[in-house]
Image (cartoon, rainbow, N blue to C red; front, side):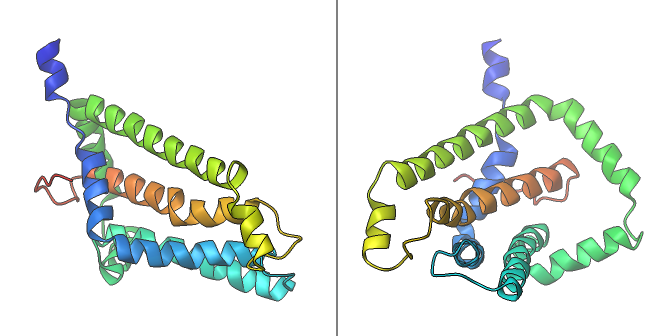
Length: 193
């Protein structure tokens, strides 16, 4: 049993963490676009029109799609877009990907499960920290007092800002890396965080 536990690897999680470490600036910028967009949508800086709300939603979703394409293309949005186009144009055999993923799950299912549970712990901890920041510190009141946020804004402006900077991009990266890893499209070289 002890030997088996030592053989468990966190390859999908470590690959995702290493990708985030290597490309944190891009992920932070795209998360910042989504985070500020959410703050504006929630009226953090004042009321917005329906048109502005829709434009902001397009920008927010475009930043998330860009993260997804950036990861799929392994740090290249254009390559990620090419892969998606190839997938939906039938140039990629989806059945072979499914067979590969099923085979890898049979061989390394415990690794996937352990990586997934470890990711849930990390995401849960970040969510708890964000809740602490929003409800248990003076940040929200300080931002209102200093005029950064309007008086009518709620704690959700802070919560969604930080979630768009952290949990949402991290989740997109982890899930995409996991899927690419399952179908053997993630680079095989093992890197440590």
